[in-house]
Length: 339
Image 1 (cartoon, rainbow, N blue to C red):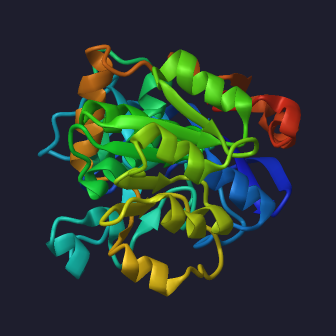
Image 2: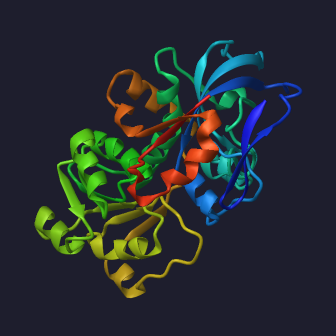
């Protein structure tokens, strides 16, 4: 079957590989229909993705169709369309025992630690498939990135009436916005890309945006919040300078959540951190319940993912097109690969 492997940074190659040989107990064989391309894939391609090893078949934002199931406990059947929860947890470590499989001590993420979905068929645990009779394969492939934002908002414990600053208007930042709004927060989106901020206003319903390349963010936020600053700051940039600056943009007694990550050490001013009595949280992946919640929200029309897909390509053209999406003038927000 066809597959695409990232051999080393900057080197994608189309290959032929064997069909899955067997179907272990508790697993399902699925046909991959859609693969969303995300920041994890970009970082892997550039060679600065933490937790990554080469060569690797990328792809963890997947819309799939079930072909066979070897699990008498599962309700899945051939033909079911599903989103894939790509976090393969051990079920035994302290995180798993406490209901946090998203940060399992032995976690293997498809497309990062083990091979992912840029191939025609894969075998996955049946419990990692979340089906929908209504959603398209495009929509199902976007459930996983939405889960990142959903979990980040849960980690932040966002409450109605508070100001939430979302830094970074890429796909992960965008995934935060609908869940912060659903919690009743007033959202401010900040980025240095005016096109992405316009997308937030036009397609996400964000009333307040700040172009950090043109305005003084702290002054702009104080003007919006009546000098208070946001009580919750969620950084989705994966940029060390942006993450460190969150301290200056958070209200006293506020919370900061890092969704994006980078490969390196983070430094910030400790007296400022203590003076404000800030709470600093990391957010990693999503939990199983997030997938089911998101599918229900998209099915009811409460989240519209259609504007997100700005680029679309057939599987045979991925190697050719992938480097072009990284160009600053590509306008790429979310690329979708069709198999």
